[in-house]
Amino acid sequence: MAEIDVVLRNVDKTYPGGVRAVIDFNAEIERGEFVAMLGPSGCGKTTTLRMIGGLEEVTSGSIEIQGEDVTDLPPSQRDTAMMFQSFALFPHRNVLQNVEFSLKMQGIEPDKRSREAWQMIEMVGLSDFAMRRPADLSGGQQQRVALARALISNPTLLLLDEPLGALDYSLRQTMMIELKRIQRDLEMTFIMVTHSQAEAMAMADKVIVMSDSLVQQIGTSREIAESPRTRFVADFIGTNNLFDGVIKSRSGSIVFVESGEKLYYVRKPDYIADVAVGQEVTFSVRADLMHTGENGDMANSIEGAYVNTEYLGTLETDVFEIAPQHYVKVEQHRKLSDSIRNYGDRETISWGAEAGILLDVVTANR
Image (spheres, rainbow, N blue to C red):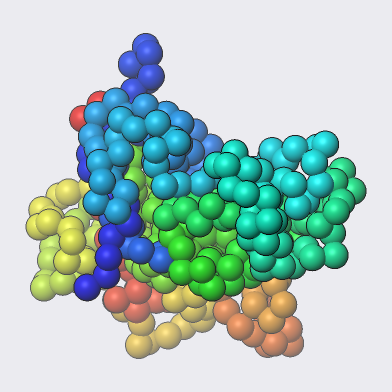
């Protein structure tokens, strides 16, 4: 059975004036997991990270780190380290001095702290830059220094606040690989805040999706991508097509949803309680599970007018308008010569009965 490093129970954060930044946050984080808290700006993810680190007070609920209740403890008494987006390096100190600074503050003798700092600098690949100051380093190199400085004290938990936000695209791709490698090598628990689904999906073992101060879904990258639970997650993650409708009937795990003039077969996942005929619902269909052209084996079909094609290598995403301002995306691997469409061309779009998934609703007593 996996050991648990962090437990958050019914954690709330309310600011003066009654603004609820985090509402009823519950999660368990296993030892050695890389966890990403993902969501748009203002959703509560950074506030949650700061509460774990002790930089924000908890209004109600509790936080445990390795079985100890740290809810009311200051940051210095929690076995955590934090890496900020700004890196916050000392400009007048070189790389070695920046990395060993926390050990110096702990009173560790110079030879030992220098030796440990060199080991950490080597791990992040900066041995040739140890005597340089931050101003003489690239953004990626500065990030590595900040990472080494955060890791030097060997914390139980490393908290990362948008760690890749200041880097350009190509460097961000490289650092995603490096961060994950270092995390695995150290077998340390990382909790990262990001608004980038690409970062979360590429690095995290567990993704916590937040919106409007609420946890929308917790799961692996694959679970989040393939089985979104709420309208927000389906809209925010990946390429999903959303339909609103009314339940007309049900047969086992399949519900029949009327949307416009069409009746669709939609899968009801086990975690959704019984649904009632006449209930208004939303369902989602992944773009890669939709197909263009007539397909008699598919339970669902609709017609749309061709709008545009988005190209990404051999992957093409065709966009169709099925109703005014209601667009559907179809993601397919296809050679350029297979099909050439003109704006406004009519096309049939099909998908299987199991491809559509009924979405749940996340609510809170505000």
